[in-house]
Image (cartoon, rainbow, N blue to C red; front, side, top):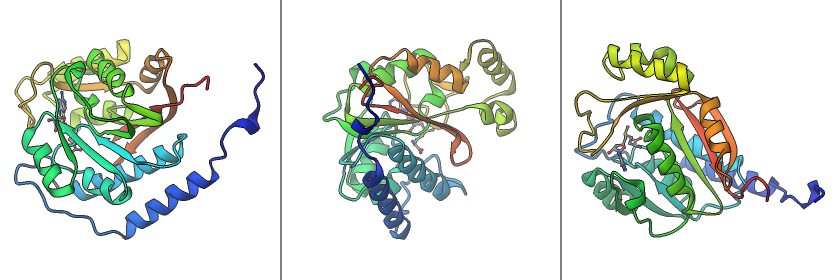
Length: 265
Ligand SMILES: C[S@@+](CC[C@H](N)C(=O)[O-])C[C@H]1O[C@@H](n2cnc3c(N)ncnc32)[C@H](O)[C@@H]1O
């Protein structure tokens, strides 16, 4: 089969559309009502949310999407980023999924999202539709490699034809600063770093339930190399890598963009 560059869709219209959506988002008033049970609240709360909207905009621009009609925020928490995404894509349908029931209930009542209660096993969660964008802000920063890959497989099966997953990871910046940031107790952190250095993905459970202590099964801190994550994705034949930006979310988490159509299409 010969390659015909002109057969690829021109992205100009889509880029301009996403730029306009982002411009309108910047003018929009964000609902900053906080859930009484929000556990992520701190001085960076608004900036982290805004940065999520920016990361998703860049992800859309680097993909084959031309429009965003359906969005899944997973894990939505209490809407730190969702409150921004609903302004970025005002015409889209939003689903908000988390294992934190008050979180999804707040996202439903405050931001009009459909709540989906998650489970410990990705394969047990029923998603009601396919998504153009799945935003995964800080789930894989807490999961084992096995669980991360199972979530990616499950969520990828719920992507539309040009749908994308935008997922965050603790990468090199976290490797350098994780101890100072106090992600976890120093001896446990050192084990995570050892796993990261040896195999590209370090992980240890929290010794105490964290703020989101209602999570069943393994839950802790992960640390992963960009090269390792990309190598894992390369083995998934139905997904392509669109982008990987170190410190792409709030100058902290790395942002991976993967999705459809697959690389040979
Ligand atoms: C660090 S918080 C991030 C929340 C949100 N994305 C934000 O930026 O504020 C991690 C979230 O993952 C959720 N979580 C953990 N395990 C989960 C699972 N199996 N399914 C869905 N959500 C899960 C927790 O309840 C928590 O809300």
